[in-house]
Length: 147
Image (cartoon, rainbow, N blue to C red; front, side):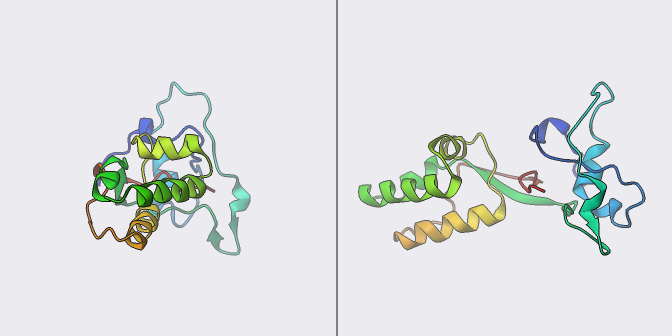
């Protein structure tokens, strides 16, 4: 399994310290907690009440997934100018703001498999059949899941 680099974790991504959890060994939040260097005095953590009725609502599977980032290749694959503009508008609405859109477009933020599927479906709607539309791919941990 790939070693977890705490620098890849977004600042607000919560880890877990529940050593008594039955699923700690298969939970990315628990495993990521041990990757934080001792020099840090605090970090965002999930609270114990996320565990309820035998299930953790903050659980994230400890596995690598194929992440993608950057949307510049996408726009090279969509040849119709109006379609590129419509895609940009729909993605801006999907991501919530122009600032968020540009962070994804410029590759500052990773796109998890769900977001990749959404974008692929969107470009298909505009007639683009290309499969390889993201600028970069990596098999890494998905730190995009919020609590």
